[in-house]
Length: 139
Image (cartoon, rainbow, N blue to C red):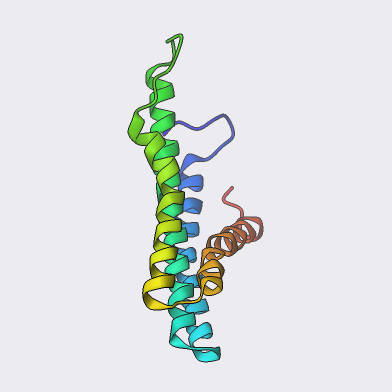
């Protein structure tokens, strides 16, 4: 992957990977805390939310990579054509989250608030990875 001038592509990839695993680690820690503080249903909800946030992040990355490849491949074309699967993945991320939250809420009586808290693991992971980059810059 060729990056713009002054941007370290490997560093960006490492940061993306760090955000991915931190999402799951922070979600698991939150799930453990929720289980100990409330119940196993709350812990399961936080973990499900964190797993959905991780999946959402991976699909977003895959969709953006596909858009980048299409734009590079069609650099001289008057109008770029984006594969339908790319758009389906962009919209499907949210549809999957809504469907999973609904099914788990109705089927297993897991509190919605706990799943929403788990979805916040991605934001917490992004903040943690950003702070890491500030404290230990790659350059």
